[in-house]
Length: 256
Image 1 (cartoon, rainbow, N blue to C red):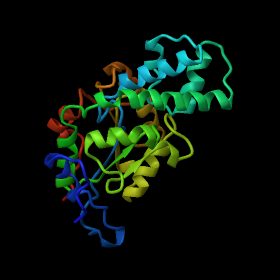
Image 2: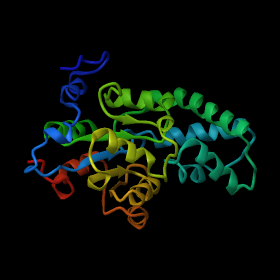
Image 3: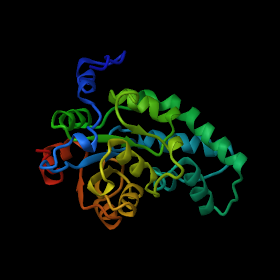
Image 4: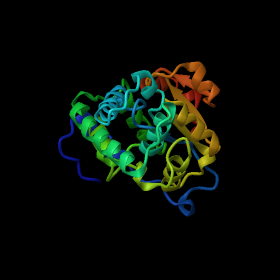
C-alpha cells in the first residue's frame, strides 16, 4: 500500500490506497468490458481556482503595461500559458516575442503563488475521486498548468502526483485546445481515448475532447454557460463535481 503523503487530512489520505494503476491488457478478463476512464481538468473543474488565475494574469499583464479587461482574460483561461498569451495580445493587436511570453509566464506564476492560499477543492471533488477509485474506475488529471502552479492545487485537493496519474503542460507538446494532455493521460491509464470521458469547465476542454474522440462532460464551476459548453461539444453539463457524483450513472459504464 502506498505511504500516506504528509500534510493530508484523514479524508484526503483515504484517496491514495485506492489509486492503483490499471492492470495491463494481458491481465484483464476478455469477458469483462472495459469501464470508462475519467480524465479531469484541474482548475475550475476539481479546484476553485479560475478567478485566482484571472487575477494573477491581470497582475502580470499590468506589470508589462498591458491593459486588458478581466472578462477577456477569463475567456482564455484553460489554454496553455503560451497560447493564452498570444491569444490575449492578439486581441489588442500587440506582437509578443518569446522573451515577453516567458516573462509573463513567470510573472503569472509568481502572482498566483500569492493567491493560492485561497484555493479550495470544489464541492464534491474529493468524494468523486474517492468513489471512482472505490468502484475501480480509472481516472487521471490533465491540466494546462505547469507543476509550478498545479502543485499547490493538487495539494489542496489531496492528490499526490507521485501516486495518482497527473499530466501537466510541461509533459506534452501541445496543450488545450489540442488534445495532447488527454491523450497522454489515457495512455498512462492504458485505456483507449475513445472510451474516456473528458471532464472540464471550459470550451477548450470540450474542443480538445472532440478532437480526440472522447466524450466531453462540462462543469459550470469555471464560469462558462451550459449553452457554450454544449456548442463546444459537451454531451452532458453538470454544476460541479458533486453534481456529477449524484448523476454518475448517467455517464459511467459499469466496470463489471
